[in-house]
Amino acid sequence: MAEMKKNSVRKKYTVGVEAALEVMGGKWKPLIIYHLMTGPKRTSELRRLVPGITQKMLTTQLRGLEKDEIIARKVYKEIPPRVEYTLTSYGWGLKPALDHLCYWGEDHLEKVHGDKSKVLEEFEGSTN
Amino acid sequence: MAEMKKNSVRKKYTVGVEAALEVMGGKWKPLIIYHLMTGPKRTSELRRLVPGITQKMLTTQLRGLEKDEIIARKVYKEIPPRVEYTLTSYGWGLKPALDHLCYWGEDHLEKVHGDKSKVLEEFEGSTN
DNA sequence: CAGTATCCTTTCCGATACTG
DNA sequence: CAGTATCGGAAAGGATACTG
Image (cartoon, rainbow over all chains, first blue to last red; front, side, top):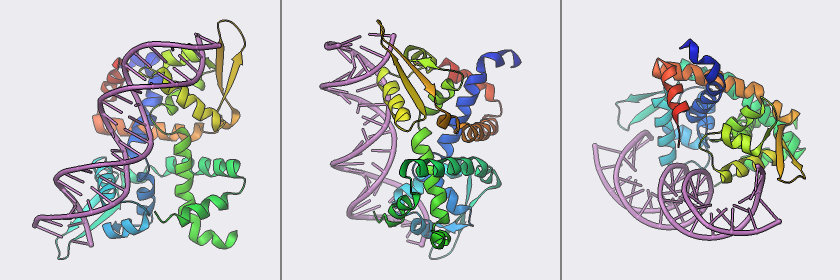
């Protein structure tokens, strides 16, 4: 394994980034993860918290995150049904990466728009 | 601007992440950025370094990165034509975020596959 | 060599209707 | 309430041919 290192160092870097992006990249996953960072949420809460997402997309993304053990899904056998999602400790490990992305992205928005509050307003106003 | 903070903190976070992902996310951009971190490259070099990418995709991604001022494009008026791409200092600002993603992604691969060399082999062997 | 244009396939994703 | 199934449009992306 050691003897391939010289050749695979550059690959390791990008493979790592790509693996991470598969897990937490995309349009919805960062938002979902973020909301779970503020505490466990049930399905209907997430649907409200993530504006514009459809039931289908929400389920799809949650299944993906669950498969990668970023989140845990807990089903309460009640009527009506009740499902709660929580970040796993493994999922919390994404926080530093997300923080850096956020930090850079904020700077970027400021650079691009000069005034980032405008962008925020647009975002908050998105009714979809 | 301060008085909107309580309401926009959670938004800012995700808007930042999403802005960053738009700029450096996706299938090809991290790889391209990474290779430019090892020095300026001309088009044909990048095409070789990024296995599986088509001319079209390479151009598209490079244009996107150039637009966001992550990279700079320098054209030498020679025959045959010669174009060189370099990371801007702004683009270098992505390094910490990419490093974190890489770090987490590596851990993730190890966790998922136990032995990550297998994944690397698969990646290196991708001929497309 | 670098880039553009065209065509065509695949994937993503929203809308809707339905089940336990 | 939570989730599944199906359909169709839109967008991403690959193959190929072509231009300066």
